[in-house]
Length: 152
Image 1 (cartoon, rainbow, N blue to C red):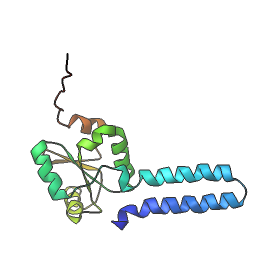
Image 2 (image 1 turned 60 degrees about the vertical axis):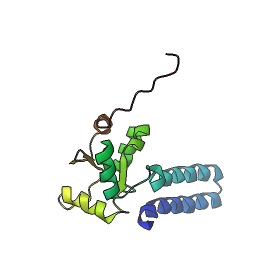
Image 3 (image 1 turned 180 degrees about the horizontal axis):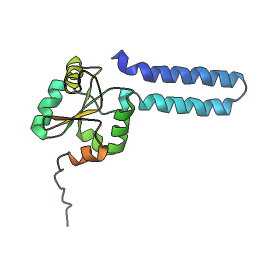
Image 4 (image 1 turned 30 degrees about the horizontal axis):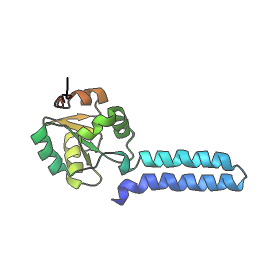
């Protein structure tokens, strides 16, 4: 758990130290702007930015039942963040598994990546894809049932 929060906490701490130094030097406006930038960066690297993670076994069972892909990720990975941002609201339709929280997930990723923990690794219908294009991942999502509006 703490491993996932290390980078965000480090970013927040560094931003606070730099901002404090700037305030002491008399540049409070720039210090506030820099601190906000560091806090946004820390937040985007935190586990809060990603949809709630599940365990690897539970994600596989859910994927088998609903056909949605499983994404193995870890905090601080710029490629995972790129995938998450580019998927937008569709990211919540995937099953996200944090390899730093689940040793079985880390082992599954190493098994398909020659012993490396390369993420994001996306599993669709039992096949693994490393760092796929976000638009390709979006196309792998099952169609949502169409909703009809009353009176139309």
